[in-house]
Length: 606
Image (cartoon, rainbow, N blue to C red; front, side):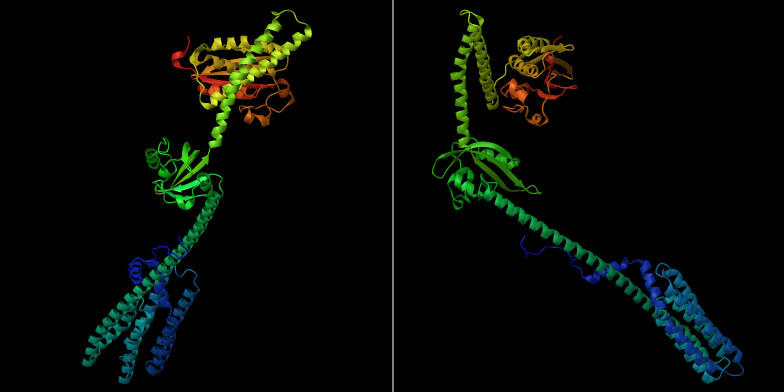
């Protein structure tokens, strides 16, 4: 992603903000709207109380005379009492910490106070209008009209409250006008309810406007909160995208540096094998420059026409499977026309959607490696033909000398001949082990399986290795009963495994001890255990005990001798026969080597 590229984020639908606010207003919280209405109603109360006292004082002054003095004083006391009660209600509301949660209760108390205030003025109209002069009646009528009209803005947030307030003022006054006996007053009495209903309608309309305003305000508040939250989320996503971009760029730089500095050839290709990128090692190995190969097909350029491995058919199947392929050996054509033996590792890069992004091919020149393998095979053949044959003759001659067939020899000659025979035999064993493990690792080792009775195999191995164990003063014993089963194995090679394990156990056991051979069969698997009483296997040697030329670095091991190939051969032979081999510490000291082989159902003995 480019630094200046825009991030497509749906911040607003096609509809306008006002339309969304109206939708939100329809879903506004009724409790919050009620709390706003109560707040609106309590807001003008101080001004209303002040106006009530001021107008009430003027009315008291105007209506005062000797005949109605007591009644006017009573009414003025009612004005003061109602105003004081409204003041208590107002300050109680302002001091409340839960006025939003108790909005309904505060609305009811305000309704009662509005009713009391209206009754107070309705009382004044009904009582004082008939008993005063014409000028005072006009003043009183004007006063009541003003007081009623003033209730519209004061109670606009609740039209029922205004209707109650104005009703208790207008209705008694209308009744007095209708029964006054004056035609003009009667006509006015007919018009007053009409004006009252008009005022209620106006208050109702204002109430609707206020409600819409409250709902819209809450909707816009929620809209603002949503936008704030979305903006925070957007900022967070942008930060994450920037961090991800930095990580991707850093990874890209690392990969580029790795490919550039890698000692092996690296190619990036598409699904059609077209070369997209290559590193300097590829240029050096094949003799092509980057500009010469980029844009060209690797299948048509790098491989000879008679190549049988990396063919177009193989490549199409690889692209379809999209699974890595390794250790692919093939020939590559250098720019100078020479063939190079190469080993490829090809990895497809697939994104989360499953689309193939590109293909990375790593190529290593193995021409020298193959030449070394060829020389190794020649060396092995030389060992086989040039060393083993004369060694066999030498060992045979020494055995004739030691057996006395060619005549009696002195003690020193006999002793030297015996030493020469033993060392020649060790040299022949080493050559045979080298030949065996080379055949196994090259895949040219063939087994000759047959049905072999386990009891016969164990007994024969003890007999063949008895003389070797006697040299170390060690006995070979069978521990427990041998299961009466047959194995489908290569008899000669399994006997070679038993010989290696028994000879090792005898070689490292103290004189006078016994090497025990234990066997058991369970769930179609035979387990053979060979335990000794030797010093055990050092901790740092256990992880590589089955590797080639592995010997524990100790005085005892060097003194006992050995090629270091026996256990490696045992492991590979057992695995070729579908088994497994291992070892463990023996309780009380020593080591137990074991191997397991499957027992075929059709080869079981009875």
